[in-house]
Length: 580
Image (tube, rainbow, N blue to C red; front, side):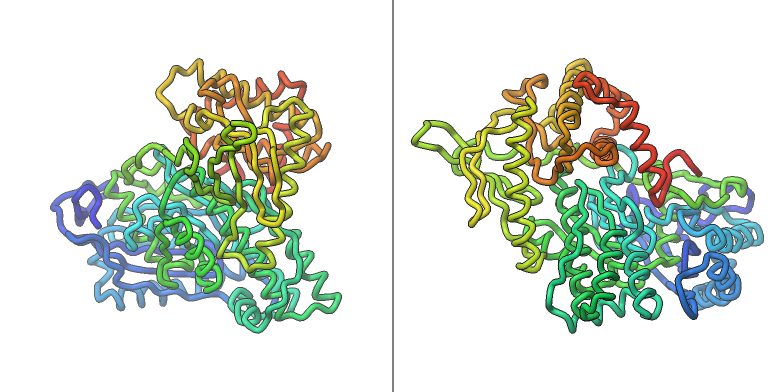
């Protein structure tokens, strides 16, 4: 697995060396973002990359959660030992190294600084180049060792929960946690339940002894998730006498179903057919099983690294460092300051070729044809009584969800969609006409709307003015919903059809996750979801996003107030925009 058919070279001495002879290179990667300090050596060869060593030493606090300063002190104590062991296991000396890579961020400041200091010291003493890499992107790049070409990544670790894919030169965050990372949520539950750190493995063991589903909040917003309410509810259930085994079982089934659902929604929206699971929580067997089942049901390829490459580790730092430096990325020492809020989508991905343009299925175009979305299959039929073609939308059983949870969600969303469509019609928003609802089989029969999805109109080779017209109309639809006390809950350009390919004549789809509300918080979440999805799939049009908000104002909504709320919601996130 070479990059552009090339391997990497050993470098001449100097502060800013350039490639010389094309011979294999050894890179030492140093990881120190949170509780683990790791070092690994990766070799680039004519046949690709080879992991020679991967040594990890985890800080385990005697009680409570991780304190950044204590974790940093741990890293100082073990850093020399871990690095020397990595070199010894790789069978090389420090003088054989051609590159140092380290975790620049995101992460805990004291931990990041230990890794960065160790990396700088080696770079200066050995007179070899240094590269600071993004921790989240490193988890993605490990997928190349498994043959991944263009996957959607579900990244699940202590502080991180993101759904990511590569579009237009960057890894785009399609969805992420709105509050805390899934690993932190599990650890917090474990800490309050007197479990050892990390709590994830103990929860997994306890879940195997449970089997009764205890209802917990299922908090999915488009491709985003939220965990704080789930943790609070689980602890309340525990205080009220719920069995720990059943709570752990229910926690896993609920949380991992949410994660798998948003991953499938991202795959459906982008049309991608590979899914990569990464991060420390990816070591959980039940999560692996769920994502694998989802992928198989979609006919997609499922990949997950071996467990030592899922957790935070130095080998993935080395692998990404080699790729970055081969692409011409060179860091001076002054460029190596750590960045605690280093967002995945802030990285210019110079080492990857651009994938083909997004071309998700158009959907059925004639009777008998069908299309499989994230939550339902869509098929065309013909009503003899009316002479009209209709769409039959069936919320199919999801194999990754246990039957009790799956049945509850399908019924709830089927009813919600019908109610929301009726309310949207009364508000003056175009939605398909409903002909029938079969609650037993979970099938809605509705009007067939001929035309193209807004996603494909915005990606088409048409003049910018027409695209701006389409965005104004889309914004007007959203504003009309909000003015009338409704949210959509999954605002993407896949959920709008331009009737008869007329960008100014739009029909809104899939309102099953919407709410009736007057709270500006919910409107802010709606717009934030739209912005994230839009930026991820139409990055070249982000300069025109204000046309959506112009249409929003035209409906009588207040874009200034809602954008202020979006900024407030952003400020609560794990990684803040505009910092670092």
